[in-house]
Image (cartoon, rainbow, N blue to C red; front, side, top):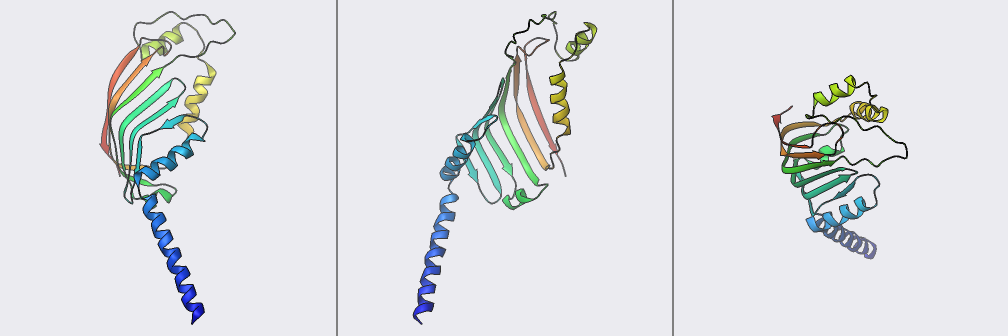
Length: 192
């Protein structure tokens, strides 16, 4: 009798402790603190945010900032409707992805190398005219640039999105050939 009572109390205390732990981990302030500490130790792009709220059916991130070299992305409010258990699948399905008011800024400042590089003739427009002007000038396209594009296209992203609503702005300057510029970008649609 004493052994079963003792076992009961041990299991009850462990159950209450586990319940308190789950309740603490459900608080956005605790989630934000844990995620910030994990991201601080990561290499690669710098990622920061003001708040993280993970519930059973959605993830919300407030004031997300990603900085990778000359590229800076700020998303004031990112909402992802996805049941958490679906993220454990090899190809998760996101029901809704919403980010409005985001800003992408490219400050194409590339550090100078010790070699002297001939400055290309400035071109008035950006886009295809810059590509065509490069071809017409017989200047070779940098191989690392082509390798980066190739690697990005070969990367598989096994995620499906049901509904998407991304609206924001992009700004670029010193991005090589072409003029500085900005654009309003809107991606809205439905998927599978």
